[in-house]
Image (cartoon, rainbow, N blue to C red; front, side, top):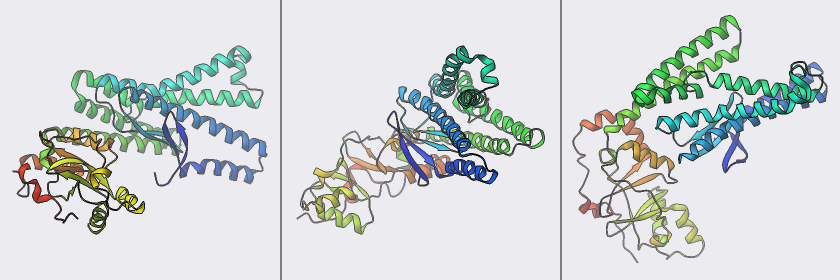
Length: 384
């Protein structure tokens, strides 16, 4: 993301252009200048590239809007030379929902091609598209052809392409998510090998070889991720949450909390009152209060209270899902009385994914204390 440029928003979703995308117009311009192509021809090629990637944005937007229907947010859409990526917070686990989300992208390309055909064929006929006599009809014909190619390519049963996700969704209906992922990944890797062989020995296409490598590695990563998530189903939040942490009393002043946060290198801190969890305060909130000459305002007035909370008996995948959707770096774990028992952080999630099978077999941490002894974790301070 640090190497991407934001170019706009579609349906409330940020759209970014990866810097490598600029290599395409640069190649068109430089090759045109080297061969002496007319400026009008280079403009036509640039227009064609723009039209194609507009179709890519619409394709990814189809996935994003379908996912939104099932409550899944899309962080952004990124355009790259090989296509686009809609970064969903998660993929729906229910087979029917995943099927709809996967099909939504290619369905957009079907609509685009159908609309263009419905407009142009009555005017110039199929022959007019096949043998265009003007720049406009040539451009439309190319856009239709590319959309048809996108449909065929994306619907290949090669995980993690859309067709591979469709295959997994259909298999999941009868055999479960993990086994379906294993099979779809194997099919995807087999398809990748076939594409690579075709690109190397038949079509002599380096881009096809690159795509084959992308599909092969993507299928392996999806299978590994599914195995990891399945191993976490037996692991609970209480097995991996952080129980040694600093917390700020709600009655502490902003200036005191800011000094502590800076000295302890803490960007955010849980706020408590008599052991009860109140919210999370960020160092930016504290600094803003001090800068606005409100140093004595209480931390309880500055903390964010509308947070997702988890219990220690919830599974790690549930906590990981909540944390991924959160704007904060940690997820509070509370007991039935609202007392803060621990924190779930991204590092803790990573550790659980790496050592999950081991954590299940371990006894409780010797550092863990009962909820009624939580005050021992609170930051020792004198409230003025």
